[in-house]
Length: 474
Image (cartoon, rainbow, N blue to C red; front, side, top):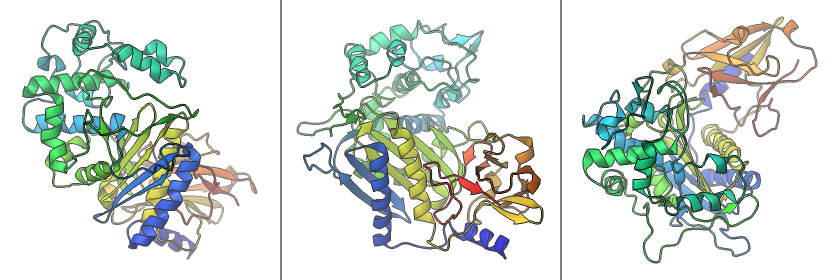
């Protein structure tokens, strides 16, 4: 019976109930308070798209002691969220047969760039969108600045970019050297995005800003997303985790990487809905598993696209000097989550990541009796178990495994690979003798080698840490 109850709990936990508006806002309140505490932000904004409805709420104040709470129309720098716009523009060019994913990028550049290849292997469009160009991180070159990051670093970045033009970029692009074969090694590169902006302008004969307005912003109804603010429009203040007021980003390049984009929570929830449109062919292309990866993929410039306990999940992080954005979608549930915090520091990213996971679980799991998750005991064996919700596509699961303190958290440990029992159920029996009686072990279940499953809100065996690991003890 215990085994059955665990299975039923997991199956019903994702999409077997509805929540009232009051319940959703209560969940938002609790998660925003936790995020505010963990991130140290003065201001926290939360946006949710669920069951076709949009929820937004704002907490704290933009400037400490001033009582100036953010609104749906408050402007923030959204940084790398912009890369999703750029990805859609490139996806549109692919669908319109203006470019091909196998093309050498130099086909869409004016001038000579013999340096944009390695041992005769050129950079292809498909390398560009998956951060495998072998190009440096940034132009202008900021490698020295990045060696010692502090609350002074943004000011140094701005000094470097203050007089750096598009012509300077093109000149420096002819001098960069690839350090490995394109297509083989992940290397996050803002340079690649500005290069994409240049290519898009050459392909369409229009500015990146015009392409953005015509093809995405106008269609999504995003009237408050722009590269330059108008007269009387004010950008919200952002802070370093040290408490120091941060400068606004300076860039004279195309803006395709995100250094120039400003937006609002009101517009970002519109973009969540836009990304969740299953009938929009451009959106679907921009999320596609281009390389047919058995693990995660990048679509067109996503930070990650793969599986979760809520089915397919795509996420993007935007890190500006004084604020950070988290943007994530769960297409199989038609659900999306967005956070804006006006702080930037080493602890901000993990605070956002963990908050998004907690909020998603709270929004999809009906409150119920606390149950042990992830394993049950059967005779002399510990049975690790995972059941994917029946309303989600289990065919996307290529492997399931368990990693924890008992195997040095190795996701690829050959003795801890779960075996498929049914279409959506995976199990592994391990002798109790492999564990020390009375000792507490922590663990997580993993899909496709890299997608870590989060414990639900009804799990009784969690360790109480931010990672929300499951525990095993007998």
